[in-house]
Structures are given as structure tokens and as C-alpha cells.
Amino acid sequence: MFNLDKKVNQFAVLFLLAFIWGGSFILMKKGLESFNYLQVAALRIFFTSLMLLPFAIKRVKHIKRSNIKSLLIVAIIGNGLPSFLFTIAQTEINSSLAGILNSTTPIFTLIVGFLFYKSKGKLISIVGIFIGLVGTLGLVLHGNVNIFDGNNWYSIFAIIASVFYAINLNEIKKFLQDLDALTITSVAFLFTGPFAGLYLLFTDIPSRVLQPNGLENLAYIFILALFSSVIAVTIFNVLIKKVSPLFSSSVTYIIPIFAIMWGLLDGEIISINQILWTAVILSGVYLVNYSKKK
Image 1 (cartoon, rainbow, N blue to C red):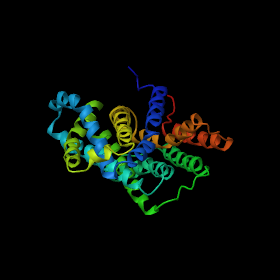
Image 2: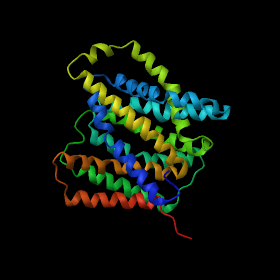
Image 3: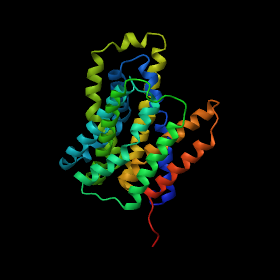
């Protein structure tokens, strides 16, 4: 079992999450080729809830009345609404811009924690947050792709989703320390899964699946649910309980790095500038979790 008291393991988990979530924007885009944004989000939530249902049934008995409010916040604000908001955003903006906007999560985590959860960030962590954001901007803006190609008003949906992620991080850290990560994840999706399934009953999913590439794109959504929701969200909730919300949220800075690595596998060439911006990001992430040895 991974010992998350060790910093090297904390960073390893952070990079694992970035690796998994690095492909989520592309998987959403694939799903949107056959399904509308509401269907993609609902299918993702429904598939996730089905896979987690056996765990939720076993763990729901451990839930206390005092946990219900926080679990509803995690279910709706932390998992449910962002799934819809990011798919809405990606109907009009590209994956690169969505990745940049997702990288505002650490800043919102700091602001939300200070205003509503009475949490304080160390100065060096705050500096690390802004260094990481600068590195992310430099890494993504360095590419030749026009990130502002589309209706940029839809960026607001991605920004709202990032604020919701920030609330989710602080809520779990502050009020759900008595529950294990799998309980938090499975029960949260137990709340949202039935509503997603009910909505899907009244849509044209069967006819869309029968269209060219429909079944293939449905498979992409299933992969999105399995890796980006079931596996990654559970691991992320473990990490939140062990480290600060600021460090947990800094995973959004590393995601663009893995986007470049996927590009390498596709035959693209990495440049010196990209390596330098990657170093800036990693230095920012390091500072967020920096502490003096006693």
C-alpha cells in the first residue's frame, strides 16, 4: 500500500492523476462527436455510479447524518455539475483552452478556503501556485494552435467548474476526514447516478449509438468514466485527506505536460521551450508542497 506520508509518494500520485486526467478532455471531445453535451455528462455519471454501486451499497451504512450535507456538496458541486459544465464548454472551445481554465483551480482553492473554510496558505505555497499557473500558460500558449478559436463566452462554464472543484477540495478536507476515499466517491455517485439514468431514459441514446462511430464513441465515454471518475476521483480523494487542498489542486498544472507526452507518442517533437516551461511548472508544484525539515 502506498504510504502517502512520504512526499515522494505524494508526488507520484499527483503525476498518476495528471496522466489519467490528461486524456479526459480528448475523451469528452470524442463522445461529443456522437452525443450532445448533456448525454456525454449524464452517461459519464451513470456509468461511474454503476461501477461504484457495489461499493456504495456496502459503505452507505457507515454514513452519519453529519456527513450527508458534505457528501451532497461533493456529489453535486464536486462531481455532477462540473461534468456538465466542461462538456458544455467544449462544444465551443478547444481542449487547450479548457486545460488552461482548469488550471485556475488552485487559485480558486486558495480563495475559497480563505473566505469560507478559514484555511490559510503558506506564503511559499501561494508563490508556488502562481509560478505553476505561469508555467501552464507558457506551456500551452507556446503551441501553434489557436486556443481562442471558438466562442470564448463558453469559457465561463469551465471557470465555474473550476470554482466548484475548489469548493469540493475544501469540503472534503474540512468535513469528511472520518470517511475513507472509496466511501466518499461511491456514495457521492450513488446520489447523482439515478438522476443521470432517469434523464437518459428520455433521450435518443439508442439511435445515436446506431449511427456511424456511435458505439465507438460510447466506449470512449465508458473509458472516461472508468479512469477519470471511478479510479482517478477515488485516488484523488485519498490524496486530499493526506495533503493540503492547494497541493492536491496543483495536479491541474501537470495535466498539460502529459498532453505533450501524448503528442510525442503521436510523432510530435518536443522543443526546448516546452522543456523549460515544464521545469517552471514542476518548480511551482514543488513549492506548493514545500516544508522545512525539522
